[in-house]
Amino acid sequence: QPVTLRDYQEDYIRHVATHNYSIWLAARQVGKSVTTAIFALWKIIFSTDKQCLILSKSGAAGRDLVSKVKDMFINLPFHLKPGIRKWNQSEIAFDNNSSIATEAFSPTAGLGKTIHFLILDEFAWVPPNFAEMFYMNILPTVTTISDSNVCIMSTQNGFNLFYRLWSAAISGKSMY
Image (tube, rainbow, N blue to C red; front, side, top):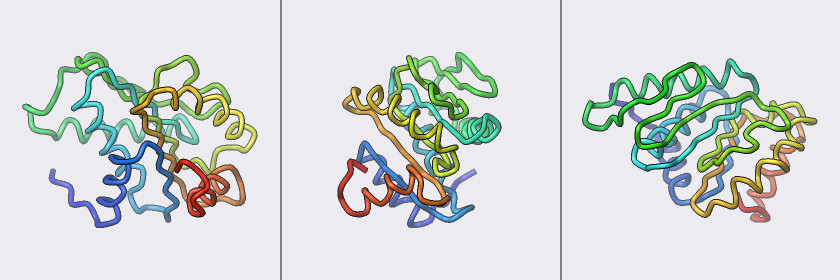
């Protein structure tokens, strides 16, 4: 079915498409995860050899987002769909050698993987002991790829790493 994006969602997609690092503080139920998933699906369908990793506060939340990506893919016109190589609850892989996978946050999530598009969903809700270590472990891996994207989005949850990253972005003191 056709999707009608709101102006702020279109602005966000334009930002993600033109900037490697994005951070989005938003209220609940405004479509931040689905909007980012729309861009992720576009990126892996129309690119070769790109890997997207969605990290969520829980495995169930990540699988739910992958399920929404699957629904989007199913409803695309046939001529836009690459062939499918893998289709399970936590990963979709296409014959253009691109994929979207999900994991729950942990200090070592995503390590050892090549990641072109990293989505940190509801990052403010990740336990602080996981968030700090994970961020320090994964960021060097992703930033070594010149055309990589990192999208962090969340509702607020105190004065944690997400808050510090968002505050630095607002004041122009970070790469986001």
